[in-house]
Image 1 (cartoon, rainbow, N blue to C red):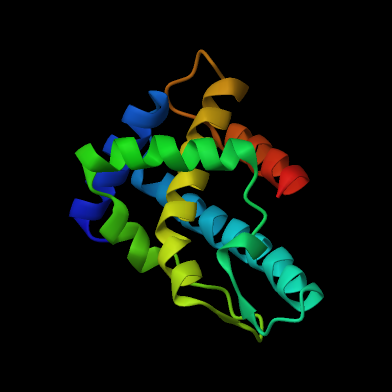
Image 2 (cartoon, one colour):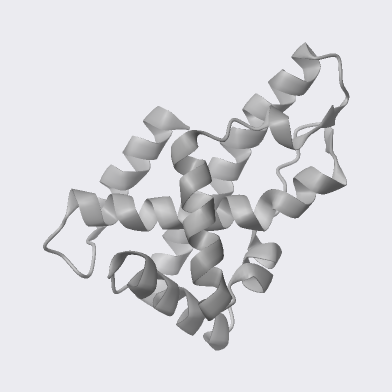
Length: 149
């Protein structure tokens, strides 16, 4: 990720959850976003098939109330930080053998942004006194998301 992108993500995590992340944390962050988008699309694929469609529509993705609220929070933060273009680059749709509609594809950066806000807030909840999450705290946050998404 270019230096400008790193600075924006650092700013994002400070604004979203009062966390200081390092360049090294961004690798695990990227892996998290990829994994959770994949998980959302696994369920989206199953939902599309269950509804006799061969294209994944936005309503096929399992967006919970909490994730939707995190997406709204991301939109507010994004107005200031302008992360959407960077997330558009890193939020690639997982290949699962089924196409997604243009509308679904267009939502990927917002989903990635919502997941990012939720991750930052989860890290803050796990370690409320910590500004720089340790590997153990990142792992705990990932485990929680694995239980829910």
